[in-house]
Length: 158
Image (cartoon, rainbow, N blue to C red):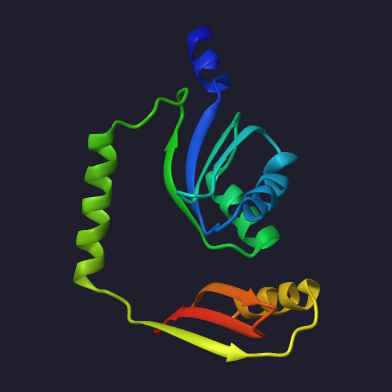
């Protein structure tokens, strides 16, 4: 029984795929998880859209919901381990990528990219627009360019 308690007290680790495109996005996700109950450590890699969360008694679904709610980002749970983190080998990553590619080949969702001309006078306007557009069902990515007065929206058709 003593060993079972030790196993339960070990830090769990989960790997999330979060839609991030810059360090600012990564900081926002880290802030959302910083004070979350049970979370001890958050490691970010915005270039690969990967977030590693370590903690004790952390519910992966609640972590995903919190990031989606606080940051407005699309979140996908990649893996959840109850033992200390070990780096995935290249072979495992390649195998996962091949499996996901096969799933996508079976039913590829058609994507639509829209470029909208919208008058924005500051970055705050751009952020407000991004937040509102991200709430629309099917929207995957929103980028704004204040200098060109453009909003680029990528979405999947259902």
